[in-house]
Image (tube, rainbow, N blue to C red; front, side, top):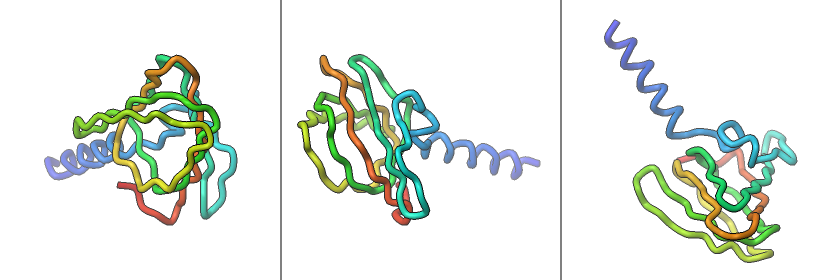
Length: 120
């Protein structure tokens, strides 16, 4: 019985760490296209909004509306993203984090998540 309880707790802990952004922040993340190879999502975050903890697989992003975002990782690391209009780049898989719009304008970007690349 104890082993079964530990297994359930372990599975639940893994679920908390690796949350799908679309599931934990459906108000912000909108799926534009999905197939067996990629999922294309649009993230829109208004000033002052904060998203629940989530992860991302590796992929390519493109900023459609610039802004300033605070990213706080589960391990305590904090970074600030000053997203520029038209900015784009490859992004390695992102560990569990929250995102908060700390700017004065709505920030929006499109992320092409590659399904064949594993999440952290």
